[in-house]
Length: 120
Image (cartoon, rainbow, N blue to C red; front, side, top):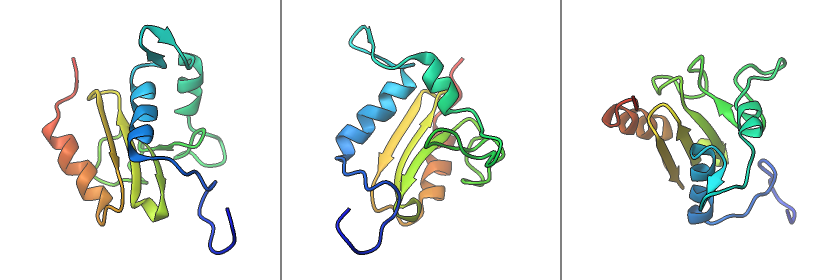
């Protein structure tokens, strides 16, 4: 990151590639029939740490609905720019959403999740 304010790790990625990452997590680490990421890693990524129970390995966990009040507790998110850049993955709904420069991300997540029922 070259000078100025610094938020997070300085990841530079297109929305399409970020969505691919979300889809990889949603699909249990599989892509095109191959296992690219272990299920074990995903499970550990989405397990709360002792110090910050709403955070895993670079993922915000909504179990207690702290990061995203009103959004499903089954959702996980990676976010940047104060939450305005968002990758939302909800395995219970088979839902993945990538958005940029969203003014009200909590409303977006809540409203979109309400339209998609939990998978059976």
